[in-house]
Amino acid sequence: MGSRPPGMPLVAANWKMNPTNIDDALDLVRGVMSVARGQADKVEVALFPPFLWLTAVSEVLFESGVKLGAQDTFWEMSGAFTGEISPAMLKPLCQWVIVGHSERRLFVGETDEMVAKKTAAALSCELSVIMCVGELADHYDAGTSDQVVSAQVKAGLASCSADDSARLVIAYEPVWAIGSGKNADPEHAYKTMRLIRKIVGEMIGAGAARKVRILYGGSVKADNVQQYVELPLCDGVLVGGASLVADEFAHIVKVTAEVYGHR
Ligand code: 13P
Image 1 (cartoon, helix red, strand yellow):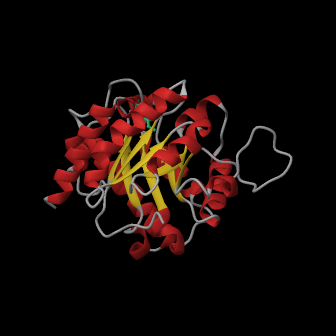
Image 2 (image 1 turned 120 degrees about the vertical axis):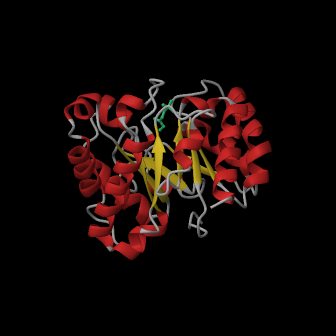
């Protein structure tokens, strides 16, 4: 589960704290599924609804080929950790989990060390992991994006090995591009993804690093996705706002399938 068929791109839908009721969540998943199902041999599609909707969404997705993931997890498997959800709890429902999203780093104070522990815990339960990294606007303006992203990757993957590579995805999401409509210049995205691949190679070996998929995220829409998925090192996209509109998300999946179909 969650392993990478050679060359398969990933289009991931981070619904964040939306929709606020289950009926809308199920409408959205049915809308997405009607298109994603037909692309399942070309694109891996994974949906990341809020925790509360995971069970109901998993029933709709059953045997559809569309994958399910959680937006976060804790690093312990059980115990006195009020409000937390463990990877062991997610495993029966989900194939995927997101860790280290910038909104968790910013609003909940998640540190690189916490991200590393969450990554290791999720991988130990055989979940596939999307670990998010990305610089703030101040870093971008100061020209220190590379240092910030390098440090996040090194810290977040501290306990990872070559064995984890097929279940590991790194999403490069410049924080200033998230929800702002200011998607990153593809050249900047490309250079940063190249840096990420190099660092991962130094950490787990170049051969294993080639199996780690790297996504771009940040204001990805139907009308700009092509410029990212065409980048040589880009293995797909992590989509926020545009994943809440079934037709728009479906378009993103289709464009990705077409681009990778021609590679
Ligand atoms: P937007 O696509 O809304 O910019 O969000 C990106 C994101 O944070 C996905 O994880």
